[in-house]
Image: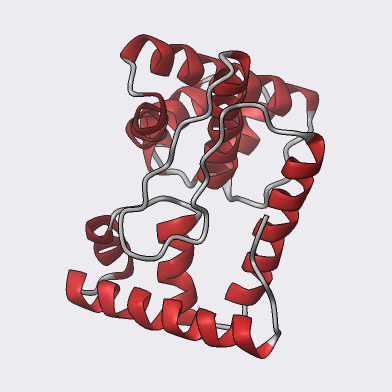
Length: 194
């Protein structure tokens, strides 16, 4: 079997066992998705390139130390590393981006001037965790669309392609997910404020 057709988890194992080709294929396979994600946040090609390189330096170091245990979920793990490096970049430059809502309801309307206190970060982190738990109560199809849209920041076109449904179906599921999420929030008497 050609290495290009091998699953991510197997390529990770091959790299850990000393086959450098494994990481090359993984980088090539996921470069566009990770690069686009970083660029969508920083909107600068040079900074994107730097963060992309730093992401894979961190990936390689973690794999070499034997600290990888994501059970085959390589891409989401790398995306988390990239996301954290983007946040680090904005913290270093003392300006957090203003995330604009792409539709009428956005759970994480994060607007900050970069002067985040430890308490603010803890509250935000707890709120995100609460929302993740609430999402678990949704039907699977709604949970899937909401997770892809909010946590993976996928477009409805990408969601539709990924779930093999029409864009209208994806939009409908998102709408019902938000309606049901509001009901779940009401049922638990949760106030999502910072």
